[in-house]
Image 1 (tube, rainbow, N blue to C red):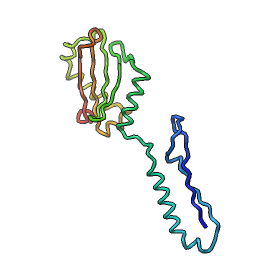
Image 2 (cartoon, rainbow, N blue to C red):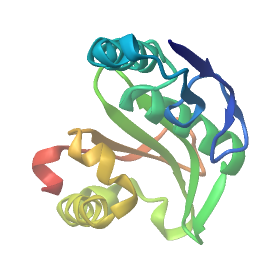
Image 3 (cartoon, rainbow, N blue to C red):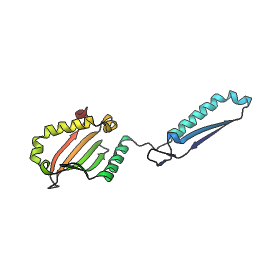
Image 4 (cartoon, rainbow, N blue to C red):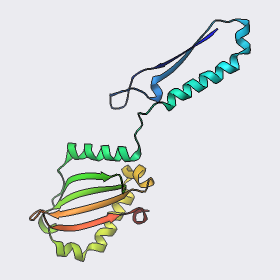
Length: 176
C-alpha cells in the first residue's frame, strides 16, 4: 500500500523571514509496503501524487505581482534612505510608484546653481536626453523596464518648495 504525505512547512527566505508557502517548503514523501497489487496501481498513484503536488503549489499565494513589488520597494527605499543627498545640487526626497499608470516618481530638491527654473527650461532637451540615458543604462531596473514602466522626475526648488523647477516623464519609448 502506498501512503501519501504532503507537508507544507515554513522555510526561511533570503530575507530571513518565514514564508508560509514556497516551492522549497513543500515536501512530498512516499511510504510504501511492497505488495503485488500495488504495482498495477502505480500509474494512478503517480498521477494522484502529481495532481496533489500541483494543487499544493497552485494554492500558494505568497507571490507578489510586479506592481506590488515596485510599490513595496519604493516605500522601503523612501523609509530607509530618504532624504538622500545625491550630489551637492540634488537631494532625493522620496520615490513613489503608481500602480494605475505603472510609473515610478522621484521627488527631488535642487540646491545652489541647479535651483534655477529658467536654466532648467533652457536645458530641458538635454535634461530629457540625460534622464532617458540614465534609465536606459540602469540595469537594476531591468525587470520594471521589461514590464514597460515609466519614470517620472519632479524637481522642486530648495529656496521655494512650491516651485517645480523641472518635471519629466521617461516612457518605454524613451529608454529603449
